[in-house]
Image (cartoon, rainbow, N blue to C red; front, side, top):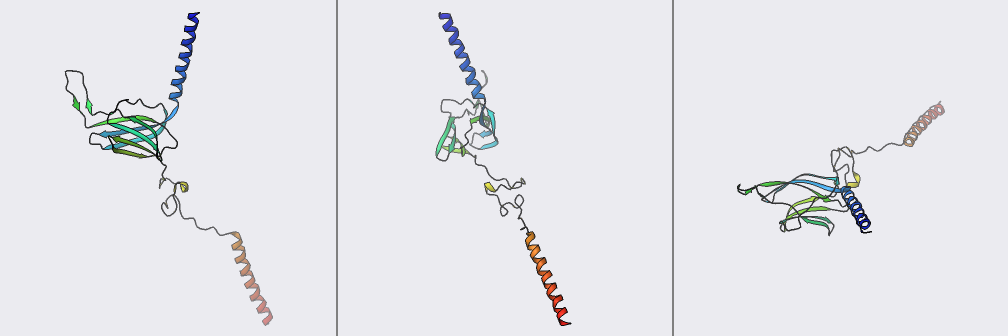
Length: 189
């Protein structure tokens, strides 16, 4: 009897582990690649939304953290795995670094506005996640505020189209003037 319970427990544990891993791998994440310098300068190399799992973040305070915001609400916060010391197996000395390459995957939130990187309380990187119009992409993005005044390349000024009725009225007036002219010539004879 106890062997059946043991086997059943193993099966339940195995199935739940497989389902947990499968669900973690199939979510959208922000992929961020940046170079962080020890003077708090940051070069953002890439930000994109991809499918995958979030990075593992340290549970202890490293002095660096990341936060994702929506309006005034914090959606996510974590410590960043940043250190500017390279440790090499003894007997080599500790080597200080000028910068580090950071590649992390943060959870995706459709309502997120900004991602902030902090060193202590100092903001060292602010990423705006709100869509912005791109002038010069041959798409007039009016829903993002693009128009013919701020981006004539994408939103050329449209010439008003003359209706066929305007042409018919003009032709009618010309015919009426010619008919009146011919009528006056006939009456004058």
